[in-house]
Length: 308
Image (tube, rainbow, N blue to C red; front, side, top):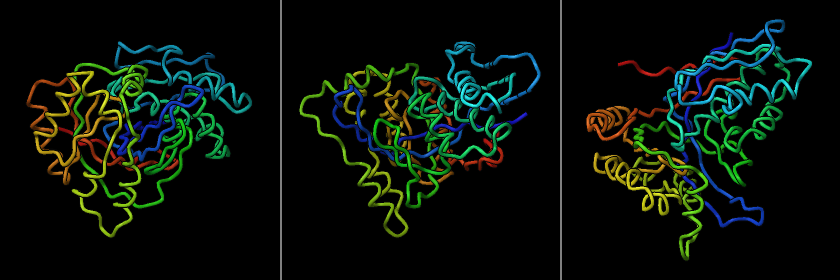
């Protein structure tokens, strides 16, 4: 049995370039992982009843191959038939909302791949595990890296950030709507005279300075989707305004939405924002965001969510 935390991600920057001939968009993004997390237990057996069984605390989600965590286990079995379990059982406690831009499903898939590799194929190189993750979804490989990353291409080119990123704290606010990725790209492409942002270059410049101030970091954050999604989805715009009005250093759309991240000055400020926005009663999910301490490929994370 292996127990794993599956953190969420925040695109601290998200520069989106025009569509390529194949219809995909090149991206340039700095991505950090945060708690809160989904929690998975991965039970395996070489001789138990063959198959993959997923149970999920969120009954609105599929538990068959419609769930990317199941597809991850199946992909591992197909790729490594000589060193993969016949039986995989995955109880999933779903903490992260879906259609929120937090990458929760991709993080679940990465956690399953880590668990199966650690138990059944420990000699498998990290690069090979990430390549397998990329066949499942563009966001999966970033969750198979420790620490913050820079993500480019269609999301398939992922590398360590290469500069220190200080611990960042904040708040997540999820309005009672989701934002499908496809329509978000359509809204973005429909903007006239749009120029891709340069937030990634700005943030890297700030991070390369000595002891970057939180205000400078906040000013450098950016997400091209904000110009398209906020006007198209009033509920997301309302959440964005609420986070800014509560006193966040920066309100930032998460991925293509619908969740909004509010950067805080420190952990105490993040707690204040969480309590203020959670007591507002307008939003379905409000949670403190704090830096996720990545686990090595040898075991679970050492950071747990606060109680209370």
